[in-house]
Length: 52
Image 1 (cartoon, rainbow, N blue to C red):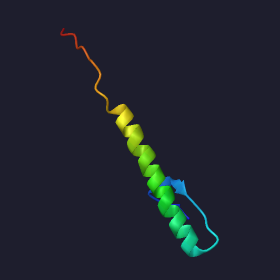
Image 2 (image 1 turned 180 degrees about the vertical axis):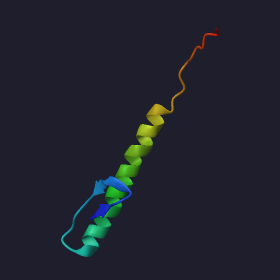
Image 3 (image 1 turned 30 degrees about the vertical axis):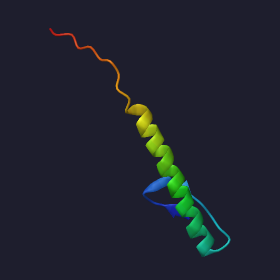
Image 4 (image 1 turned 135 degrees about the vertical axis):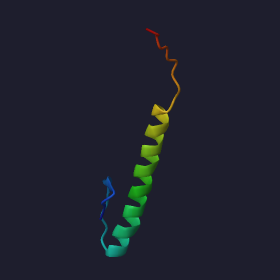
């Protein structure tokens, strides 16, 4: 199974039902990692701007 909107979310299962349950878990994991990465980049840094 694959989520077209989240290409990193790929899974498989012995049955269609297993594949569906597994892809739901894969989607959750991808979203958690994506959220953690977004938080890592959302920190505020001190920035100075010189005027000309």
